[in-house]
Amino acid sequence: MSPLEGPIGSPRREQKEISMPIAIQCLDHQPSTTEAIGIACVMGGAVLEAEGLAARGFEAKIGETIHVSGETLGGEEPEALRLAPAGTLATPGSRRPLRIAIGMGPAGEISADTFRRAGAAMVRAAGKARHLSTTLLDALPDGMAPAAAAQALAEGIVLGAYRFDRYKSAAGGPVVETVAVLGGDKVDCDAVRVGLERGVTVATAVALARDLVNSPAADMTPRRLVQVATEVAAASGLGIAVLDEKAIVAERLGGLAGVALGSVEPARLITLTYDPPGATATLALVGKGITFDSGGLSIKTADGMETMKTDMSGAAAVLAAMSTFEALGVRVKVIGIIPASENMPGGRATKPGDVLTIRNGKTVEVLNTDAEGRLVLADGLSLAVEAGVDAIVDVATLTGACVVALGRQVAGLMANNDAWRGRVAHAAERAGESVWPLPLPSEYRSLIDSEIADIKNIGGRYAGALTAGLFLQEFVGDVPWAHLDIAGPARSEESSGYVTKGGTGFAVRTLIEAALGFGNGVGAEAPSAP
Image (cartoon, rainbow, N blue to C red; front, side):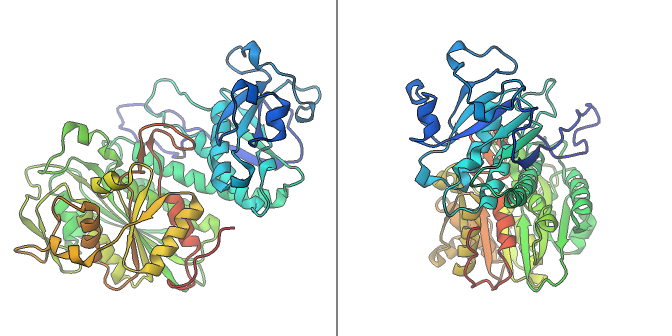
């Protein structure tokens, strides 16, 4: 499912309608419209034995699925799958639904992410079924709040059903429209409904980020990003201010202006503000918004450019996360800063050896124009400090070095404040997103010394992720700051679990959790998971 309501594409091609969101509700009965039902199956549990699934090679690993019985939609079900239906799960007089056993792993290891992965697996295994029911919350372990499990389940359902097919002649993927989460002994439907609503809100924001990242760079320019941000702000209770290319120069945003010189597409600086009544603390979120990165004059290879529309994933995460704050009741003021530009090798492009002056007055010798993200972030971080915020998180697809170090599923986390690093790490853990702390060694600071300017924008062959972090640290002063390098997990090369090939929307959930848990002082204990 795709959440953007307006056409993004070039006027040369007609845009298809956007699918409606999935309706997820908690009920005490299975609706007669149910076409498929997802059944929780724990390793060694009763369902596994009763249906003889183990003999068919089903192990109930997390997210593993198998059709147990019922009619498949869109094709004849193999005779081997026609097992006796469980009468307790069917509505008398209704069509027999396809039953899907969904692995939950060992009972003692079930977590919120288990429900997230199970929800996605159910949607994908349901084929062309539009109306689903599920007993997945029957696997709720002791000690886990029903609302937390329900939120994760809803996130998995929505994200598992996500598809970006705006440019395809024929749509594909799941077509689910409704999901009934069935109540039972362990399910308090009032609490579950709260969790489901939150989960849909969060997952819709992640899907928005995926849409932005997946859109071709010709369609998702800085100016188009402004249009989307304006629409999101109007719908989400956010204030918005935008600087055009002339104002960017007038405001001394030398990093952003310098990166934009090589492109015919003008840069934009987007500032979003969420300011609830009674807020006593302010958090800044800064997202790198390079809508296409050719590398500039330090040009990338052809292969290296293929996915560079992804380079605005940090900006997408900030915009998408902020779209939820009013609905989720975030209690602190949040300022979102998005420096947006293309990085192209035009005749006016910044050249290796040029010196740019950042908003805070520091000068930067640009020795590699493909290290442009840190230049635009420097201006954004400087603006955040000027705004007097209490803490900052920046998000960026910043370095290939971080991908080499941590792979495609883990983001690097750096910070100038141990307590703030811990709180952001806790937020990521609660959100189910993997981050790993990396150091900012003071002994490496000299690697970014410049012969002619205050600093240079590269630090040499080694420790590239760390020297990039040290560069950014030059622009935050004493304000508690955390840097998320999401170059690895921002894009997936395969569909797995609730992740779909392409833009992942990584960091949206972490930023939401960071904002929800913020406000009690940077050194305060991180809020516990619900």
